[in-house]
Image (cartoon, rainbow, N blue to C red; front, side, top):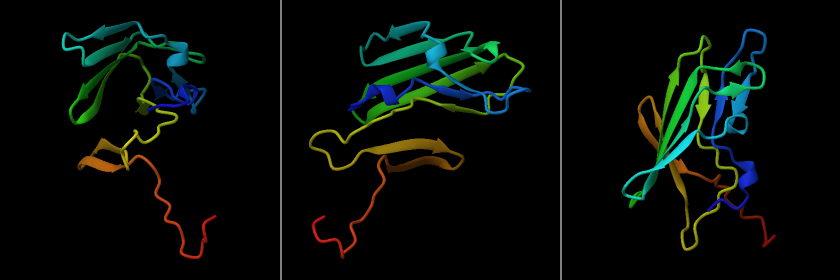
Length: 136
């Protein structure tokens, strides 16, 4: 499903620092501490603990991610425990860099939780072909 893994990342945290407002960091500075396969062999839990950032050093932040494969698709959840003195303004997880529609399918949908419930949309932009384009 992901053709070019170099464009993806496990996570990206935005933790502004007093001297650096645009402070982002990823798993590249933080190798996964543990990965536990569940007994059903259909889910795994990843743990990153005491996250490090190039500018902020070690931060007392723990990220736990649970990934499960079900009949309905891939279910992903995260839990963040922030014991640092800094505010986490956003978390992106997972970051899929290059995803293609699975063979035999016409679409690929994504669902995200928002303030009003689940939002479901196409994972790809839809660009209708104008009628004046003649096979180009």
